Length: 480
Image (cartoon, rainbow, N blue to C red; front, top):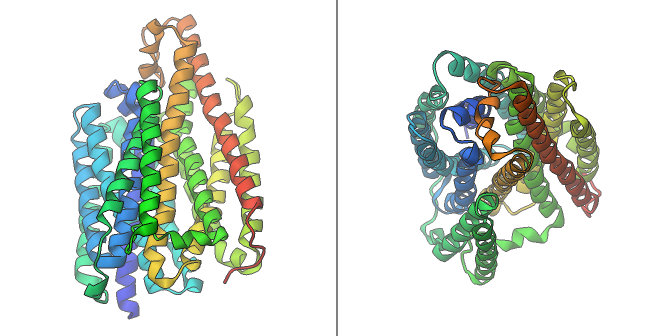
């Protein structure tokens, strides 16, 4: 492919990456205000989970379709759905409208996110990809700088509705570039067979699983019932894939144990990632009375370090086995988080930025490595499927643990607070305390702190789990 064409493609990928990453930094900054304005604390986890749920469900389907019908048409469809979902989110009038619009956004992100990685793998060699992914990660760094500042300014000077409109012109621009500048080789018609039953079993199983987790706190019996049903559906999906001539998920890619380690690591670390992205701004605004703009900068420190660290991945992979890289980096991340378990009212707030920076730097190394290796360890014809699997893992990690964190957080709040004060959390969570006595305010803040401690106690457990996973990686050699 000509360098000129590659430049246009990289421009579209860069903008698409910025578009999907700024979505996180802007929304998490505005989340306390959205919760307060829409009286939606009970449904706060759904604002992120609906987006992540549909992303997870659609990712594998888009990956298979991309291997079958080509990258361009699926990428453009994803951009259209993401852009439309952004616009509908911006005009939301209640929490349920917003949740539905976020679900539509996720349907688009399920194509855009994995196909950016797939297109890079199509266009660049393995050695080139480290440099190109580092360049793409600058979009994360840029969104980290712009997102919280822009999100805070929009919330403070206009309204939270405007944080969603940012992506509309970007989506239109990406679609136009890909339409006029991306030319891909035609796909042979003999390959065009879709595992429709596989799509059905997977979508049903994941939907039941993720909704079940969300309902554990509100309707425990229904939540557990859905989780049990989902496990049955996913078992049926796996048996079906073993017999299918054209499986949605080619199970042969899981024969490589090092590949499996990459998927598990990306899944768990993504669950950790969404934890501090959601709960650090809430912690800073509710207990430290820091404004939305400044609180949002905690995500900025993470993303900037993610960007800086990702430039080192090429050299690290050339000199060390993936197992050694992961063990050292994840151990450093876990150590940084330990102080949060003891954080009280006098805990220096700047340490949150330090923890986020260490965590982001580690993610930049390990998750970038997971993506590259997942593509390198499978046959060329399955690169799109492998990219979809690692993206599915990341989406599932974020979706599952958003629900788990939300359930733990709300259960702890309900345990520590009388019902008469539980409604006050919606205003305290944005740093406001009008109408509360000093005693009641102290009780609410104490309950919030207990809830936040519970969330990050789970995070430490996840770090231990992912360390054990990488310890048992059988590969001890450098991969090239």
